[in-house]
Image (cartoon, rainbow over all chains, first blue to last red; front, side, top):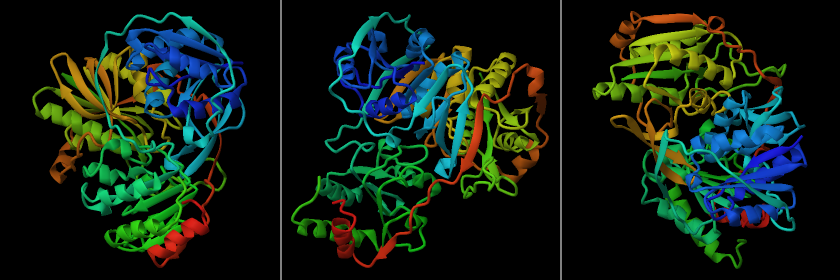
Length: 317
Length: 249
């Protein structure tokens, strides 16, 4: 048995969640190889080769892989898959887009979004927006698995020295053409990995009012999240959405402001260590998962919150 | 142009799902069922394209037990022209669903195939990508904007980093995000009219697809419950608790 992990990167650096996926993958089997597909990705391969859990890095380098199109990635993975019992990657938009295309061609029924490795063929995964956990056993010979990164700790990133081998890729696809990517650049911590997340919902009433959240996020060095309602209303961009169809976050502290707490939102944050809810509706379902609930008008509470934070001598960063 | 839209019947998104005591699944008896929400966006987008004059026919397809027909009827009521119900019972995994859809595509030869990006019951997020692989079609997943061009689509996709735009050749598969559009409601007259629209029934077995699950569901259980929290009376108390009790700031 050997596991092949598909690395997620931006051609320059490894995406942080790849480290979490490495932890999960090495729980499936110790013989873990990582496939790096991209354009000019020597630095990416090098950094993955330094992860102690990784036994081998396979690099496929060509300009056609610059934009991570699943149509281009898939034939490479299929070609490499022969010697592996498991093909795995993170269950974020990269892996969700890619892995089923691979699985179908391998005639494998994919196991999506696992949160625990029980054995090499048995996994725990949430269903119904996390309202139930299913233990599932894959009976396919070759298994395709996506991993919920926030359910596994990141692997230590230095100390190893795995061999890096370079192999050829495949023909470029003519089916799909990459046009552009609009990334929202921010100096804040990433939503997926931040220690503190403060999120706003429909109760914020406007994009302008998110300033109240921003100033607290600055003070706490927090990432900013949002409910689907806030994104739908155009208060904030989609990359901030937390929930069943957005991002799943597990910070030490999650502060939900003006969010009622629909099942779909809870699915993305209810595993957070400490949850704070600020809402003027005392009956809002968000209070049922909150460790600390404050029934208050957010437009009064947020400025007070900032004031109280300013009074503290020290704040953990 | 012809558009095939795949729809799935799931437990309504507003229902608080309960796990069965024997651990075999979740309670579905006497539970409200609806069309999978992003599948409604898929239908809506197809109807909008047809209304713009760029498509001639919309075929809605569903796979499942008898009652799954309800989702096709709903699609017919908001503007699909014809329906197909592929009858099969029990759990049908996305791989089997995509193999069934492949057979339907072979028969119907649509130019575009739309469906929701994820079903809110099993949360697999696989079928569209798998179908694209089996057909060797391009895939535009998590679409929040679709522009129909001459022989291609320009699709804006919602990805973790923000937005990505790709161009896919037709025929293509698009999986739809909830922000693609605002699904319309079916009017009563249209619901009545939909009852007269053709709905073909096919047995999955007759398509020669093996739908036997490859994944054994060993047990389904409740997730661990959070212990009840407290209400604080002021912001000052909240900050004090976060600092000294939870020790997170």
